[in-house]
Length: 120
Image 1 (cartoon, rainbow, N blue to C red):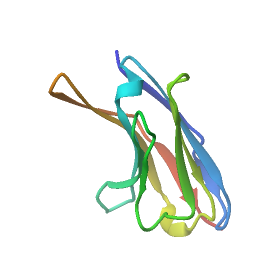
Image 2: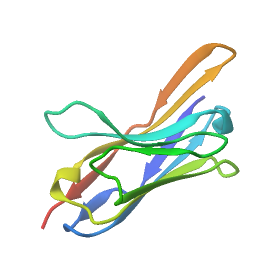
Image 3: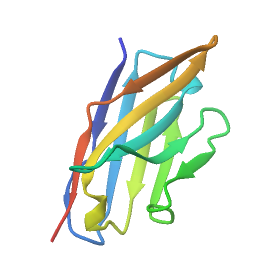
Image 4: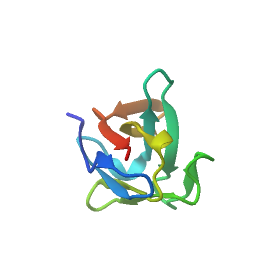
């Protein structure tokens, strides 16, 4: 059974930092691209950052480049998102995602989301 435990969300002032952690189980973590998405009220869900399974190449949305850092630990089956210099427009529900192609079958798993609110 695929499970995600997301933590680290909360309320922070503009300019502050948060670290999101997603602990995954129930699938072969080391074979999946791990990503963080976010969805703000009234907006579509968007990709924030992703990290590939083997060489750990990263990709970021333009809006978070230089402020956010994604990392993964294939032994602990965790993926983290370090968020610095937070802005009010970063306010959203953040979702952990795992995407993989195993024996030509695509898999796509989602966490339940964690709220991040940036406000003074």
